[in-house]
Amino acid sequence: MKETFYFSHDYNARSDPKIIKLIMKYGMEGYGIYWSIIETLYEQDGFALRSDYECIAFALRMDCDRIKEIIEKSGLFKVENEKFFSESVLRRLKTRDLKSSKTRASALKRWSKDDANALRSESEGNAIKESKVKESIEKEEEKDISLSEEEIKKQEAEEYEKWRIENDKKNAEFMERERLREEEANKQYPI
Image (cartoon, rainbow, N blue to C red; front, side, top):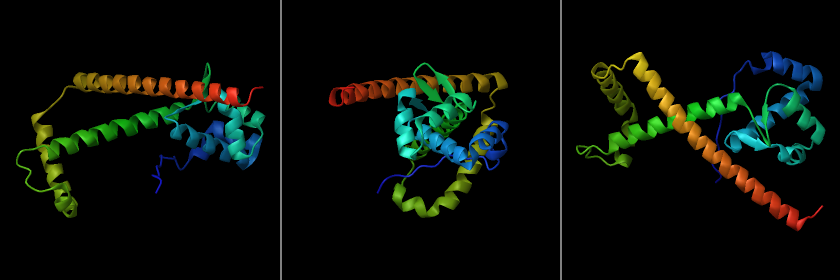
C-alpha cells in the first residue's frame, strides 16, 4: 500500500488577497491549479523546476501557459533561476522536519534507557498512561533546565541552519536527478 501524507491547509486560505486575485482572474479552476501545484511541491520537498511546467500542465490537463502564468505572476510562488517554490511550503516543511526530529530524538531517548524493561510493542496499549507520565517528566525537566531566551534563539538558529543545509542538499540532489532525467529524455526523444 502506498504511504499517504498530508499537509496543513489554512481554512481561510481563500481569503488571502493573492488568492482572491487568482480566483477573480481564473475562477475556482485557478484555485484548484494553485492547490495542485502546492501538492506537487510537497511531493518534491518544496522545490520544482521551471522545466516541469509542461508535465504539471499535462498532469492537470491544463494549458502550459496558464500554469506558467499562475506560478510566475500570481505572487504566490517564488521563482529563482531554474526552480520555483512556495515560501509557505518551505516554512511548513521546516516545522514538520523539526517536529519529526524532536519526536525521533525523544523516542530514542525513551527507549534507550537501561531500566526500560518492556518491549515497545508490549507497551503501545498504555499510550495514554505513558503520555501522562511523559508530560510530568517533561515538566520536571523544564524546571531543571531553564534556558535563557538567547540560548533558545541560538538553538533554534542552529536547528534552522541544519535544516537549511539538509534542504539545500536535497534540492541539489533533486536538481541533479532532474538534469539526468531531462538528458535521458532528450536522448530518447531528440527535438
